[in-house]
Image 1 (spheres, helix red, strand yellow):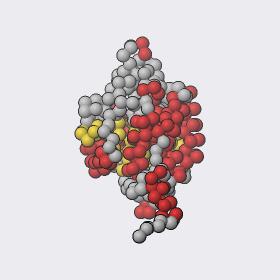
Image 2: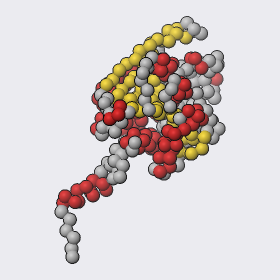
Image 3: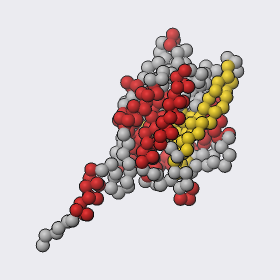
Image 4: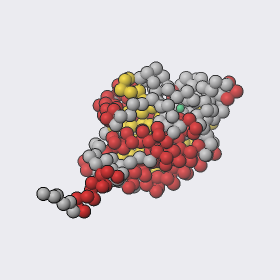
Length: 311
Ligand SMILES: [Zn+2]
């Protein structure tokens, strides 16, 4: 007996084999090259520290990009006064929302910081240590992944509500005065003013673009949000992403620390090894796009898309 398959049978098989969807889980594809173009679009503005020309230009760019993809885009402006130098800065969080009325009103929050550090205080050469950094990895990479995810969310409506917040003022603080009150300005302002808003959990992407990235489990994430840590690192293992190491690394002060303290379980995906930051160009003038790769952005973006769509 010969089994004849009509074209009706073949079409879904062909889509499964060659389409952008994984057959079982229907996970849309993440475009690492396009994400990398979002990274260089930001670094082309130069340093994006508060008060700089690049900061203003980049803000305009981010709003314009999200207006192409999101269901709702908001600027959340606030001011910050640095008492050490008696200067006041205009800062802005960027908030983009997708799928505003999901079943059960379940929402997840994806975040990154869009500002860059005003001084390369970890630079090996003392003469560079008051120079603003370009922040290809520390700043642009997390934003680049989220801009690409936004483009995917536009085309493939997610099964949950998704909010993306790009925090300003994460990296402002002067580590010489060792005062954490001068860091995480945007996440502090957001959580202090968020009212009843509570997503189920948040993922923070920070330094997610380096060629040799390693993603050990960040310590505070495990302290505050172990269920979501396991979900994310188990998924990475299932995808065969060996740069995600299922061992607990150091605790890093970052925007997720603020969100966790405010009651949002938050996981930081950040380039760390078992001891410290893994990225050798952290807070130096060498944090430039050539140290980053589309492949690493795609790895992180693919993982986050798996978390969103395989809910
Ligand atoms: Zn930084």
